[in-house]
Length: 432
Image (cartoon, rainbow, N blue to C red; front, side, top):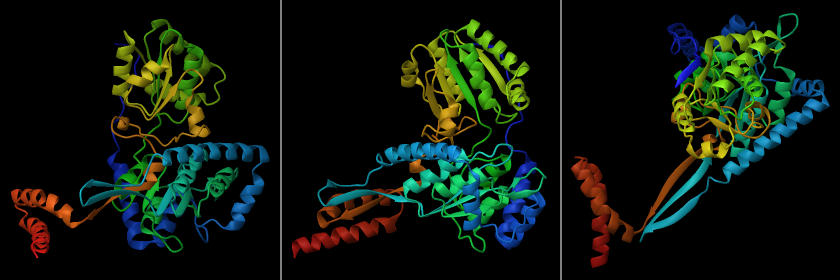
């Protein structure tokens, strides 16, 4: 393995300053409720409306402001995401089986009751993320989805409310309540509850380092989807790949921010070196977000030269990236062998942007090598798979001896007693 380009060393983890700031806000909101939410919202976002809950009138105005063409594209994306979520939901089944005579075991799928869906709205107002977190939750059967976003600033620099296409998307995806409040104070508000907002059971959605840290600290008070850091892309490419296209895909994800890793893994020195040159040409030319993407590429961009396809698989699984493209002559060979990625994009026509915006798979995915042990957000994240048991007398005769003996072996004699009482009752009835 050889680096044709290596990323600069990065500071690891969340800084103590971020941890302390998040902890302070969460503690204040838990103790003071709406007063703390207002204080931090005004301080951090210059936003303190009469109500943080978006009214039906505001939703109607947002709908009127979005042009019909964009509405059509949002509708297309929503339908694709909902359809894929329904297909996933069909794989989650209830069942009941007799596993031993007199022992019936079962499984039920129960949706989470209430979810807070956070949509990032900083430099990029990512209203496509509202589809991923609101529509999928509704397909799962969540009764109450609270959609949340920070206020957008107008040309005068003053906050005015939720970005209109985002507000329209939240409403059209079925959000039951929409809040215009940002950051840590927003997640605290829905986790602990405030005035018009009942507490939720789970919070989902991407955000900046403060939002991610808030989710980490709130976990336990509520459930979370995952802890997402800066977005990532890796591309596996052989000598059949187009360096021009590789460069575009690397920069396409790098535009998210200066901390976004962009990695090319290739068996072709020529393709790797040409891709680096193509990136430079894009950045020296007309790449639309070259300031942001260029900084990310300089800081986090890597090109790794491997000796074989097998080594590319090994390196890729070690990187365990969020988005993984495969641009090779036989993408299915890699599909069978790769194990660590958030979402996989096979063939040169499969680009991350399709999944990010409209194809149907979810774009809330594991980062920072979390793909080693988890997948991304999907309909099943909003559903609790629970179990139940039905036991008849003949079931007790079979299970009680083992359960009691194991309990005694663990010195949990009370557990053992609850088993033997039942066993004795069965034996008494049998002898009566």
